[in-house]
Length: 327
Image (cartoon, rainbow, N blue to C red; front, side, top):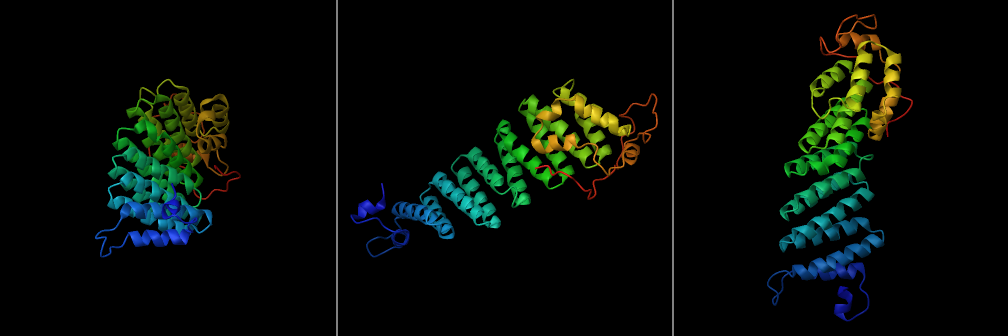
């Protein structure tokens, strides 16, 4: 029920509600401590009206004060909800530093309320809101959401946030970071027995490294995960093998054939699926990549096992022109 009716008058304006709230937060000769319960109701209603009126900066302040009043009364759950609303409004105003700060405070409030999973989900939700406008901040929030869920024994719930983090790095053209994110995702899936997601994560990691021109890193990555039981003998494992082998042989036609023959690539998250369809990338020196992988640069390598001689180096990503983004 509105606080207006309680006062027996007409509907109060946002400014009148704010004045009432501030008054409830002060002490008087007859009120020795703030009336936080009444103040939070006034602040909440004022914030709603301010938002509706397009006065979003003022709404942020009102909801922040509402959250602080909730914290004073030990109601951390509601404090988290109001701080999350502050983060969303800050996004609308393109105040990205404030978005992150409010998201972190909301998460901390949820954790204090004994709801760590809700705190992690808050970080991931806010990350999704700013993934294009502030990708680095969004990546950090999504990564922390994953870590929190894993620490809370809820690794199975981290999938969407790992996918978000990997997609952000792919769209930023930070392909090695994207591959590392997918490796962490795969390890998380292994712990949660989420084998289908594990297989897609490891294939995505291989694709990201190849898209960057890092053939040797893709080969080493495959060597690291190729023996994992849940990955062995899967369509994803066979596709990863075919791609790495084709790169080691510097055989562009074999790369394209491996892509055309595999349904597994179709089911990767969109940025990785798009990257796979564009392999090998124009401008990459397949011969140099092959040699860095221990191959012969495209000449016949009779009897040589492609996993021998794993080494560093690769074609490198550089700043190659691209005719299609990965978003």
